[in-house]
Length: 173
Image (tube, rainbow, N blue to C red; front, side, top):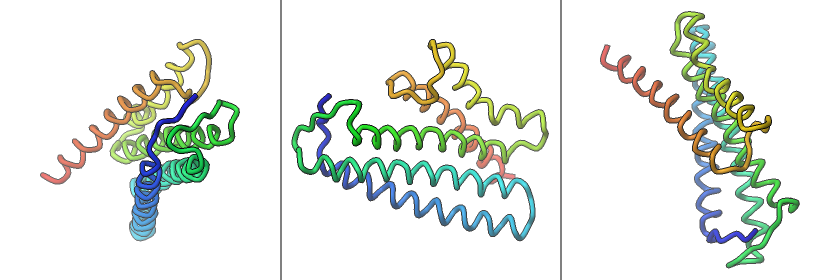
């Protein structure tokens, strides 16, 4: 497999992932501070969600930086195979990001539900993902395949759309 990604992409991507991780740490810290003041479970969900999302960006940072270091010597075209350690770290970054981000988004949605019945729907996207994987002929949580990337992004848009609508309605109350 050949990689045709420009080297500057790894530099810029790594810098943005580090920045996003730092913002996530700050959001997590202040949401935990809010939880310690109010002792509301909703604020603990915020804290946990931001921790998971931050872990996702840290995983992407690790994968990107490792790739940058290894691809620097073989630019402009790098050839790797699936048994290459660089490929493992790229997958680690992507899988870690998808897994922890879905959990983080689900926890954010969970913080908006007031009833126990409604909380089932907050974790439904992770369940949908598992059913989707089983229906594809096996259970591989996050395959490195294009069809899953589309499913992840659709689930993310649904979850973030719900969060956006709830935040907007809270703002106008």
